[in-house]
Image 1 (tube, rainbow, N blue to C red):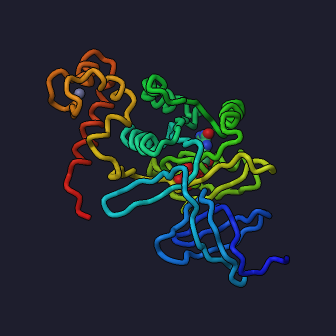
Image 2: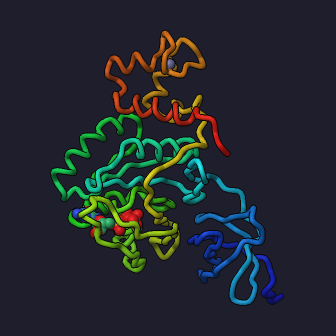
Image 3: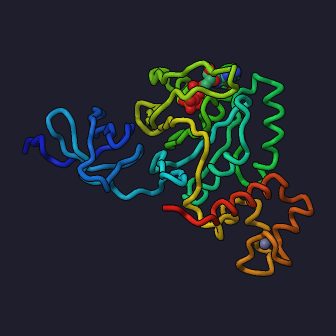
Length: 303
Ligand SMILES: Nc1nc2c(ncn2[C@@H]2O[C@H](COP(=O)(O)OP(=O)(O)OP(=O)(O)O)[C@@H](O)[C@H]2O)c(=O)[nH]1
Ligand SMILES: [Mg+2]
Ligand SMILES: [Zn+2]
């Protein structure tokens, strides 16, 4: 039987533009699709059922997700992608990274059950790089893979990282101006992601990427990279403060020693986290970030 244009088809969401998405069909063609109703918003990485309507399509259903990475600010929730195998958090020697924002992204990944890797780019900017690299020294001990990179000047560092991404769908996430789109351009020259020169006067990146897009690295479509817009602040209002320390591996492994099962690690006697802090097993910066996040997440919600 020949296919009728109104038949339901399966597809993969490869980019999102507000509520509208581009769906890749099994044959590899791309169709702009609109949501049928407000409650089935599709994300990059989603498998969807869609129906053709003239040259465009309508999303009828989003198939169940294995995971979803999102940030939640006071005002809104912003999803980056769904069904990812690996989160590559890209930071750079310049603009200087914020450890608080890095920690927030790691917590969001941990709570979503997504493996995360940290990559510090622009090792060619030697002085800034050394300073930033030193600030990351505790992270491998927390179980995170940590890599040095210079996309522009160290091809070996780039190919070494790419080897670890084979046969995976990897979301590149990080502040603006760290090189996410440059990374994708190097992996997939045909992607021609628009990159823009960093605004040096402001010592901060210009927002060049405005929506998430999935790119295939290989013709067999086994390895994919997802480019995402840089973020300034990473809200994690989805996290229950009582569970916060579980998503911080350096705190979590010491929380097992706490006298009280519901210890907040802020003031209780016999707290394993604070004794590890005193012994230098937890860095003062990480504990301070925990305190600040705990307070922030304990504020009454206005929505
Ligand atoms: N020195 C140096 N600059 C780099 C390197 N990789 C990328 N850049 C530069 O960093 C700037 C920002 O790169 P982009 O790839 O646009 O950054 P992005 O992370 O995609 O930024 P947004 O789209 O705004 O989130 C560009 O000027 C790149 O040329 C590197 O290894 N070394
Ligand atoms: Mg970009
Ligand atoms: Zn405790």
